[in-house]
Picture: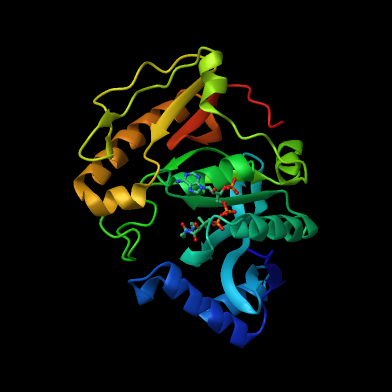
Length: 285
Ligand SMILES: CC(C)(COP(=O)(O)OP(=O)(O)OC[C@H]1O[C@@H](n2cnc3c(N)ncnc32)[C@H](O)[C@@H]1OP(=O)(O)O)[C@@H](O)C(=O)NCCC(=O)NCCS
């Protein structure tokens, strides 16, 4: 696929095209579409809507706005990235990465050093993009962040989310966005280091995986937590199993964050998907 052109979206006509794109990425509920007037007001106040175009066709977008976070020293400015969506036929070709890289450049230009966003921790592709390719980290688990969601991708399952932190001026992030491609993490790298997963998923019907009853005690500098590689497909095939995964991983991640672990990487190797959590004084290198 040719490399898409990334453009800053500003005109009312182009914002209407972003509305239409949202309907294709999140089918099912008109209420969940961010309307053009809201996008326009946000961009007039420091917000950013970026579109990815392939031969004039809009194939993806990312939208975010400035926000405030609480810190012990009082409120601090950051960029809150709210939505990113790529048309299904154009996924896995680096479009999401290019949009986030453009967002990174523009937000740095605004003088901010922190971007946050949320995503469903059971979505392997999102995890791989956010943590491994972009270098975001996470130690914030939000239960039922959006209450009951209505869109086709999310309806009927508690909307638990990871909130990720993207420290955009760190060497860690600069390296991941740089030209030198990082060697993908392999499961073997961890087996050699004698590191074992926190639990092993069990076989269910067909190729579906089921979460086990328990996980091992949280100890050691690095731990691995496995999730299904295609949670959306699993949701469609066995909805109650999707709920079991939600409950189980909620307990795993809440316990791990409480114990001082932070999610720093994600392995997608040989059809398996595993979070890497590091304890304590993790550097952001
Ligand atoms: C999540 C989303 C924005 C990513 O966009 P994208 O253009 O596909 O992302 P990229 O191609 O830059 O990166 C995806 C990476 O995941 C990899 N990947 C594909 N399937 C995967 C899987 N099951 N598990 C882990 N990684 C996977 C791809 O190979 C690619 O990595 P690579 O470049 O090293 O090959 C897009 O899939 C999307 O629109 N999803 C639906 C809406 C959504 O979830 N939005 C985000 C929350 S608002």
